[in-house]
Image (cartoon, rainbow, N blue to C red; front, side, top):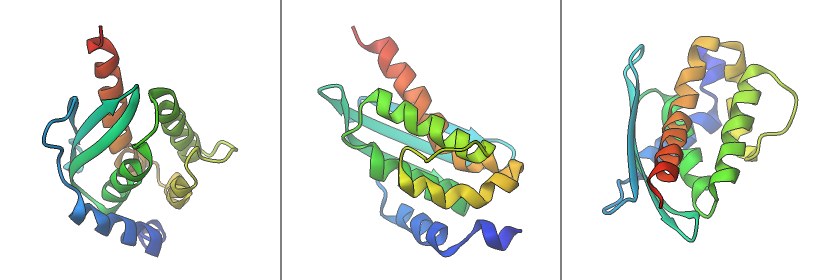
Length: 142
């Protein structure tokens, strides 16, 4: 089962975390971890005109967590909070086996993870950080 989880698309995407950098002056920074496996992400977001202007992250973890962080970073720039929340919901639906197309087609690469519930948290960790960041941003805005 493990081999199916780490297909070529996930492995290639996860490798892109080597290029990831933190933002020098983010509007919001969130750290989230998965204490069961040791995965951790520090997610930085910068906003402009109500949309994400830049994403930075430092991700330590398994291939699934790293690939999910890269997908998030690729698609979040230019999105508004409602779009991002739809993407998070669509990923949760995908992992739960619900019908429908993910908000971002690239999220489909995580479909094999659906069968291994213990690995859902690995994929969701960066998106949990994104939710916390969006919630924090909404609370802090005047």
